[in-house]
Length: 506
Image (cartoon, rainbow, N blue to C red; front, side):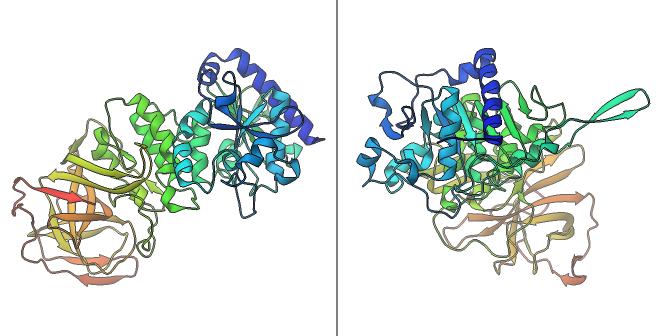
């Protein structure tokens, strides 16, 4: 295997970045210096490739990982019936272009072992897959380098692209005696995030967990490590402002988890049942910074009153069809849509709901992985009922007993034939008397059991006490909704009297 032209220049650039980081960046070296080794690695030294069991090695070894898109082509995979063959030899002509390029990149860097998911996890053994997917945090965190085939849509396209050198030049303009450097403010997002690889959900944690990553993009290489982000146009460091904190969150703050979820939820998964599994490595890393907290179905118990207030930007027309269980309805992981968190905690926000207990039934032993079932019991002082004939994203008035309030409802999906809804306030901005929470419907199960169908936010204060007309501004249709008896339910009485009441969310 050999490479020429752009490939040789790319490898030389990668070598300079890698050596500078390996010998000069203490934090990066600390992350990769560990006794951890993946269960299996592909040994790539000696001019050939073969699978090795890490326990057969005398000591921990430096290795590289590969982030890549599987795409729609058939790639070579480790299966139960070819493990013995892989341990002897993996012929080069059986590997796709991306795998071969990763070998070519790793060898000159002095990395003689490579971890590739399809070659190191037994793909037709569910138990092995669960065990190895649970180790993703350590695999990517402690690898010496992550090689990312960022612009390749599948394994046939490889890492080395025919780059346009115009993207590599620093552009300057002169105004009088002053010279100014011009830079694309979306340089990082365009070349790393808005790419075939960047659209894949599994890759979010690979990118954020890796101590060092080199992105082989369409127009240039990008380097990320604990110390800096650089590219061929700015080989020392990207100028300030070209990478937003939300694009590369630190994981150490409470808000950073919500930034990760907002990014991850908009990415694609081949198997929707992997929704929690594909982010479990990041959850495990975040748990190191929140040792007293409890991870619950993609949320954190200590910040549950904020984490529950996610909303869907653009709802699907119908609820997802029956299939493998993903997550409870109150978790963003129940849906395959991009979500956002409209509120960040501040001294102005006061919780109106108390989370009492959570119950999760896990698939396997991973505390951060897939679930079979989950339920949450909460207590809220104002649990209100109304009827809405038609769902809309527009601001409108909702009637609760003798009162009406103008609010925006962000539905999780447009319609499932339900018209009777329950509003559970979760947070209140005490400076503006503005409330937000989630919209529920009763399940067909036990009494007091509900599932989430949307998020609401009050947008106008002091709405007049009058008969309610709901106006759907999107289509200009006026829909009347008469108040009904029993608008306050489950132990709550008219007038907002705070009486004990607990509901179960599934």
